[in-house]
Image (cartoon, rainbow, N blue to C red):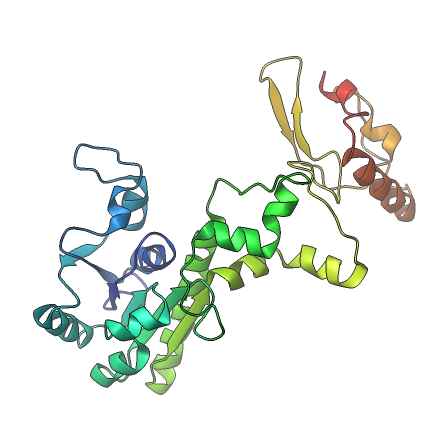
Length: 299
């Protein structure tokens, strides 16, 4: 039996952070009902795959779900929502706080219907502060966390193609929702689980922010090139495939790194650790600014 067998989830989400949170709960065995407007949610039609218009985002985040369409602003639609909520264990919705209140999907309204209900929300900036009612997408989190500056080059910030902030927010929200279910099993109490795109982005990029806060190093972007170990980058080659991704997390002396891949030997175990660390830091700095020393190794 699946771990969430018998748990009903109402998914009022759109795009990624909300719907994928519900999708993950569905993978664990929950019954998930996607609730969307009568003409279909706008996330159905991103990058359409077929004549009907449904796209890849929809197939990834709406799979394994039942569905119902309604007008949540109409009296009849609100009544259907009320009846569904009365049967649900979890409600997932990624809308700003003001939109939740206007639709009757805020925590106070929902627990008036079902006192032990768990509400899982995903917003851009949380439910307090000057940005509480602003919407946001993955790229906003990447930009405001500083990740785009480091991924790009000076003057040219670059967003990661994979929307990792959206999907990571969904994962963290599902994680919190599971904790809320355990809490409810022990106490009978529901609660409001809140996740934010900005909070997720800062969490993922935190090690860089910690370094900047402590050392004031003021790193600048170096594209694919990693600045803390080397050689870690994407390099052109003289053979097939035409490029190779190299990810080295080590402190090998520079003489070893510069040897061709075919003849490089492992560093003897008796080598001193402090020498490795010093050489590794020097290499990371060198490779952050030059391709010298690796061309021989990949030619």
